[in-house]
Length: 182
Image (cartoon, rainbow, N blue to C red; front, side):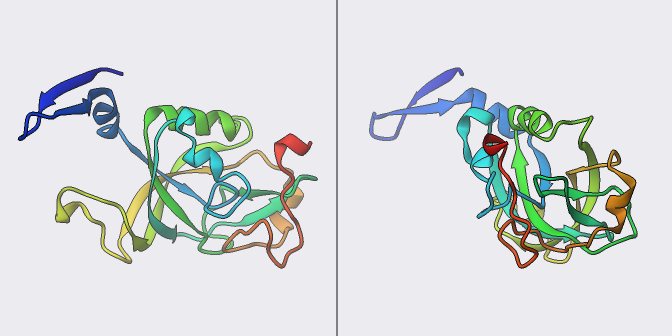
């Protein structure tokens, strides 16, 4: 990463991370609904600098209905790409840089297990920092975010119970089995 140096008002040296600023201008919005959310087993991947930059922006839910199921012997949450069926699924919105987006593609097994697709998300809460007030989305407004959903699932999964807000430790009793335990 390049560093540009400039003197501050009192002669002290300020360091400007040029590479980091450049990557901030190419941020993509990603909606996470499962184990990557805060308080869930894989959230640490979103906060690890080695994977790239992920900045929490707020909470939202899918504008369209989708079936969110817990499938496989490892109790993995899957958003089935069947719009119009299921629930409005609640999750978190992040701005991510290219490095984090690549990491998430690999982590989610994209394109074989999950596919990264743009989905309309309704804003429930917004904490994101923006330099201009007009860039702040309105609560209940709609924005497009990438979502990892799947079209490659066993046909019987469409008949599993649908969830609107995934929690690995929820009442469903289907605790997620982390990769390191498999």
